Image 1 (cartoon, rainbow, N blue to C red):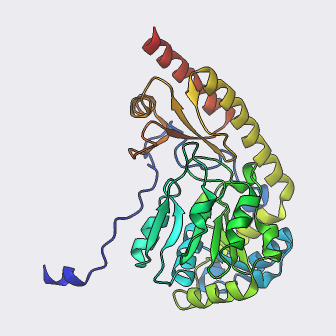
Image 2 (cartoon, helix red, strand yellow; image 1 turned 90 degrees about the vertical axis):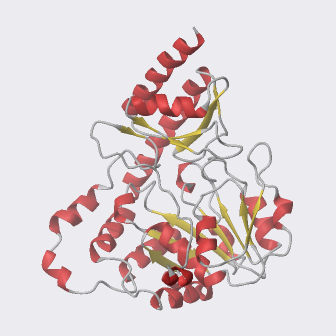
Image 3 (cartoon, helix red, strand yellow; image 1 turned 120 degrees about the vertical axis):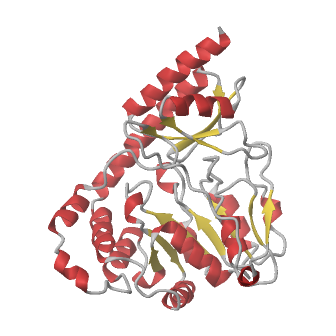
Length: 354
């Protein structure tokens, strides 16, 4: 058909499966197994729906202010969007406009190449080494921008901030984005580097450690000039990206730091226990600093284990891609959910090896 000649065609990002059936153990999309802070529920209970006839605050002022206070920056340094995907997409559109390729790892968040294709941004994937670590030297060449997930998804590995700083320092003529979606689970943030580098953008999310994936809240922190360019693009795209319910719920979440700290600690404790038990079952994996474990069994294929788990209504994530086809990304659920999964794996693998 003739009209298709002018259609922008891309291969879309494929999200983790969202099972419709009930009574499943869902460990495939890195959601937090615990509810949001109690104040979030209070916001929803007390929300005056008559206010919905009005537009929300386009500047997201109150949420930016509490985030600025939490992370000890100026409100003008904070940008808020509909999940970190929205923030990252807007950042790609805003900052990556060179004819030179942007750089990111070959094994990383699989939305990066989708955005690059969507916005017609040239890119080069830099191969992680045999241990799934970044090769710093690969990012010390001419480029149009850099994005690094740290800790990385799906591997869970944390690149030392000192290595990230060397990359930023060597690339001060382009914007370097550090995607810290999982940093709260034991990683080290690059936020302190903002005082030294005006080309650094740090992106985080409420979807993981703040248990609010369903609310879609993400944010970026950077130099005030950098953020002003991001706002210019946002207001040229959609002035009202954040609805008033999400804004109010986000504010309540940030204010309850004690609950946030407690929830993160529970996830980390469960993760470290499950690491030991998976190792005893014959799995190997990088040392995760996230709310998931990227594991493969030493004798049974990833596809086979994935299918076996799914038949038991236990959902994990699997990619049929080179280098990682035998790995499963297992989100950390409650202790009860993880025990159910481990119990099944123990029985299943014993039968295989018996």
